[in-house]
Length: 412
Ligand SMILES: *Cc1c(COP(=O)(O)O)cnc(C)c1O
Picture (cartoon, rainbow, N blue to C red):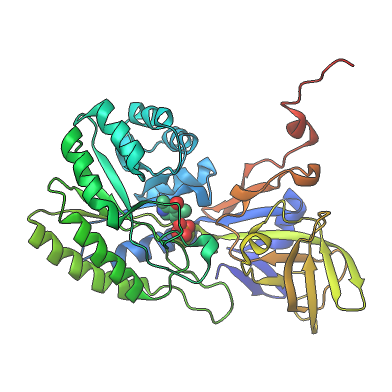
């Protein structure tokens, strides 16, 4: 963990957290690039037996500086909107290194992506048909299938189950074949992304076998895209997906499949969380300690507007008191300042918290800032990146002017 306690003070790569909060104010998101690099390299090394390509799912953390850093590591990009495609291109990614995997977007938006030259991933038969009628064999596509496996325990972040809106059911492949044959579409890849937080390597393997089955039906493939789903540890003692184990077993199976298929394919993954979650910390200041009849609330200077994951899908974020590392542990309920219930954590053991202390949230690199809003007319926090041993402001804290920028005043 890059957040370290030494000589009584917490620091990130040698930079004191207290100094960061002083300089940039709170709340603030801070990202450690070295952690991003370590995660990326762990994945690459684990799959060194196969021809792996990592397409970072940039919806997790979209700051262009982070994108440029991830590009420098050698990764491509997974994008889910035309705006993400544009941000990726502006950050210097080659169109050929970007895959566009939207859901429920118009054919119009897909045509814009085609014009920008990125790989197109199609996840419903209606659009596949329209795409084929319009482009014929001129523009290759990847097809997103839904294997109907319930991966991970949380329905809100699982995308492969039977009620999911994502992908084309594997039971509809006969229909897909008809559309492909009739329109002449070239299928260059098949894709599945069954959700997040998959711990069991066996689930990946079952998914992989299903993807191989689908792949056998298409003769001109260049890659198989296994999506993401890697679980990362949240709580002390938590396990993440064993990517080394996964890399070993899946690489062997993948290479066997390529032999059988008769061509060397690329093995794609699209991790978001795995790459950036642990690299990010969210620091907030304690405004109020409030003893109620039921608990002791720690009220902080942020809320679900800045970090929605706990309220949105019961995500666990480990929280420590940076300002009082040796204080007696007590039990707290950590809550935000939004006029809405915005509890970050119930019944958490934290070193005694005092008004003015700084709390650190772990695992704040993914789906933190990118899901932030202006609810309660609060500006969004600043973003800071630790790079080459130094801290860099990579997004300014918003102001009231930013919030009102698009307001049009009507005379009355
Ligand atoms: C969100 C998403 C990912 C990344 O998921 P993580 O759980 O952050 O790794 C990958 N692929 C697609 C298509 C996605 O929508």
